[in-house]
Image 1 (tube, helix red, strand yellow):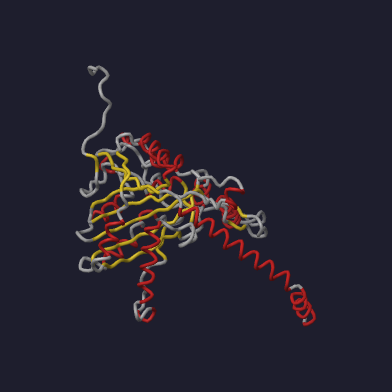
Image 2: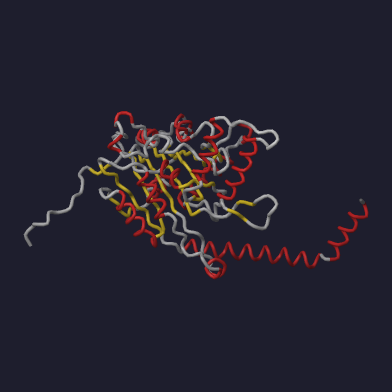
Length: 401
């Protein structure tokens, strides 16, 4: 054993110039790519689109699923090695945002200016009565106020409790995939309604922001036994399904009888993989002027996505919060202040997939994204939800010239 260890040691000592060169080249390449990516991101022209909701929405969340599947799959020009490694292009990403400004609830989509028309066309195709306008960023007046008077904030990210292929509870599970006219309006349960109600409860001086960042799903899964080839979330899903079938069904020598829950689990996983997937990051922030900050809002914010959790499939759980459970973890408060500053800066930059705030995303498919971000129908009667008072209609064809 000692001979083997000495042999390995002498090998590395004899070849250290080669290993040093490899490490230096790898580090240089990494720094170079980060520089190129940063320059590319700095030159992106962003626009913020506000989607104003019609007074009556007679569309199921499937309409938003069509928008997501058709508009948010734009990669942004990373198809060739020249674009990726010479120009530093990165995969395009979007930010879907539901915002409460002192109780006024609004829907936004932040996008590169290059894809503004695509998003508008897809939204109007599904929601012809909606109004889409380019607006100033709502974070600007808050930032200006923070420079003049004290504010408090609390932020958190959300992740999935299981592997990506396990689906959350979607609008289909709430029977919202059916045609609206076939549903009893008094019995409709839209899972986004509790979120809207909570946002609408903000008082003067309070703000609550929800940010859902998405891009086309990338290949991040390292399959066991093949560490040099990455797969996508569906490759991981196939391995998960294979393991579950072996666990649930047993072996040929000792077969097992699957339970109804086990059959439903396998069916849900296979169905989930039929839809396009998106790398996703969810960030929420509660901000208020010092005298208006209500710490009891924090628990409600962290539980805002509970209605999307499925008992035997998947769900959301908060992580990376800007607070600590015990006082000795941060006796001076310095760590909490640093975390809050980073969270706020990451939010206003919409940074999640790339530097300066690169985090590990999870995958949601188009159905799951449409569940947590869609234009609510009349079932959501929150008075603070901004809707268009009048509906649009085409002018009559017999108007005089």
